[in-house]
Length: 189
Image (cartoon, rainbow, N blue to C red):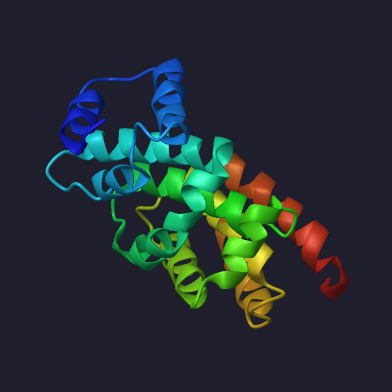
């Protein structure tokens, strides 16, 4: 599938089955993950970027061997992702890759990244922005929890951010925030 054909496919609404079918094409070599990643940053049409990010998430979860070669580029471009709909899919991909219990292919790819601090900085940036949707914020919390062993300073900052977000947070934010505080910060309480 050429980049133009992919753009055409993503120019119309997709259902979950169509997204899964497109993701499967990456496994057979019919879809280039780099083309998909590039479309996640298309500025003139946010719906194409959203659909590309949705397919990319499915590639990451279902075909990690196809996604991991592109992980360094994904991480390097992370701060440039300003599309709020794409951010949700990007944080879900990060939850998959940064999880200490991730698949071995992700653990190896994650350790091989030259600079993971960009992930921490971007997650905190998205977390504190008022325009960031709750779904993205709660995913940012999980990613930051996963990275607190590697970046010990995260723990205090994350605890403060969670407590702040709980003050006026939505039910989803209160639920996830309380769960994280109870699980990871109970010894500090």
